[in-house]
Length: 402
Length: 219
Image 1 (cartoon, rainbow over the protein chains, first blue to last red):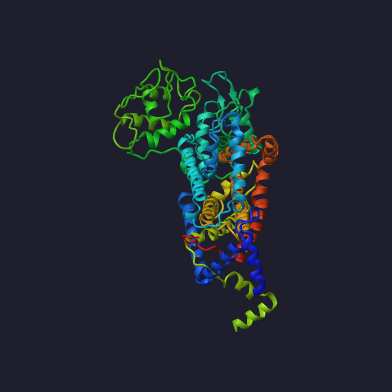
Image 2: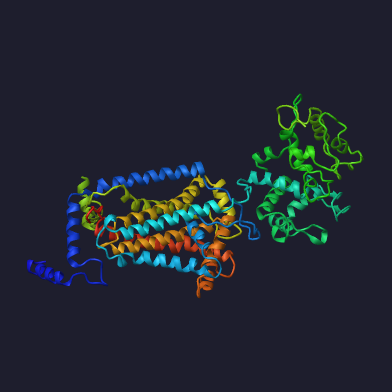
């Protein structure tokens, strides 16, 4: 620009003052800003290496932080999506929590204010900010309104987020099987609870005893090679989920008023496949976790180590709420020792306890032989007897107190 | 020797000019808050790399999505690390991009001549949130399913066009396989392309106008 031209534009601009509608600054202010910026650059630093060194340092720190977070906290396991589970409390990712919380202030017919008007307004304001804010000053001290408004919004967002976290009830604990081995072990426990009373502890089938509505029905084994070779995982899944109602098997899927989530059913299928199908090789970890404990000579049995796995596999299927069991529940040590219409069913040190007599298949006042259809293996009965003689301890240290 | 090769390369590509424009330039003395922009860019690159690796094993269908993520976590060498980084970098990126926006706001850096840079930045902020929203559904777990059910139904309450938005997001009235593939397409194709393009414009403007200076008391 020649000197003459510069003078002319200067004159024009001085007379024009600030023109509304175009931009926040007039030409003179713009030039003034550019000049200041030129000086700032002159006294500034080189982008490479002075500035970029800081950028690289921060990015590297973030990278280390990410590796640390991924390694030491990881990603929390979650059960598979289950559209039938209406008890699940939905919650968004943390950075949407404030929006979620904001909606609570606009109930019923006002909902659209919170869902559409406010967010829409916020986005529009954000886009138009440079064209709405005509204050040429840049330091926050000279922009008290703008700085104050933004501060208030940010504090509000943080407060809403905290409120959302504090007021949301904790999610019901759900176990998630991560590896195949975990899935198989989880499946074994679920099988013991939901399937054993009809299909037997090893899928052997036989005559059903003590199950309401199915008394005396004879089931074929479900652990045979034929069964395993001709039923795909999908078939097994469908049978468990939907039941086979003409044969008397009720549906177990939660979507059909059963108790099992899709993940539960998948675990049971995995357990069946890897335990009974001779083509599938049981993972080592699952093998160890699912074998029943063996008592070493001279070892004192205790509930947690030796008895609970047996109880879980052979007894809990019927001895849980909602089943015919004379109110004798066996889900915990406490229940095993102290529940039931004929309690105590276990008297520490006494081999004439109800439980021992029934395991020995005696017919007594408390009931008939247990388990009804097939006796426990002699070594398991012996282990339980030795446990009762030892005082029925809960843990490895010391006898029971009750 | 090296300079000879560089000058031969420059003769054919103009690489020295590019280097001078991008790296060898003076900028005002700035503080550590000015690293938030490059940190956002870095986190985006991390997401691109880990995201591409995850897409090797991930299957966007309700029957396989959950299992494929499970397999990434337990069956793939270092799969847990890649997914862990992708998961955490997503949260961190939202945080860093937001802080970057606050830095620009409180330094008044969106004013002349950087108005358009700000507008592209707002697009990037919204696209980042969009990535968070669409990516959240992909593992097809309980959290994902129900958060997306609620999230999309919120969009459905917008007066007039709410029902249309809801159907467009879900690909029907309910959350289904169509929703999952839709969110997958948005997460790996549409939004990343938007982000890449706008990052290009954003960076061009940042280099063209120079990074803003820290305002002085009287400014």
